[in-house]
Image (cartoon, rainbow, N blue to C red; front, top):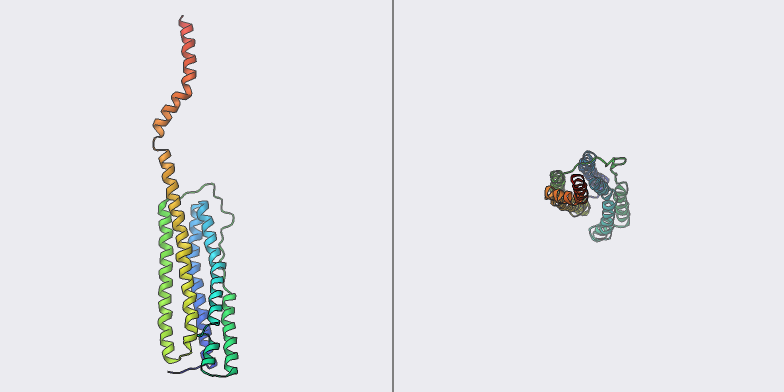
Length: 243
């Protein structure tokens, strides 16, 4: 084993991270399109709003998390610059390392956004069922599983690369952390938010159902109350007629 910091290897590491971000974008666009379709199909305002917030969370919130992670890596012992320092590779190699780190960071700055396409949805005629939330839950879970499989794939690939070239120890945390942030964001942010909305929907549905449980009996009781005075007046008039 040894270190290879040639331009060919630098380009390969840079392209690996770019490919990783592209794959994250494509996978996330897939689940986002499904959320958009649910919102457009159901026209249930809470689903429309949460779908929009979920996509915004990916576009902005998770991008900021990626940038924080990048800054943390640049200041860590595993950054290219610090590895060059540890290996006493010289100022020229350190300068190239800083340049590469900035190039990688720029890839995150150029984070591809996803258009939510949720403007103008008329929510006056809506429908929704607990089964719809179950379908959303399953789609998000499938997305997370796919991202976890991708993370394992990159982890294995990087292990093989490190066996050939130890410099890959520097790019490894960047790649794996980028995928991990997305997974965690969808687990604790988006998935749990839809789960909370599902529970609230079910609670409100049960409450409304309970209100209507004794509708027939309530209607009969209230009807007696509503017509009692009129019925009494009618009876009085009938009595006058008969008298």
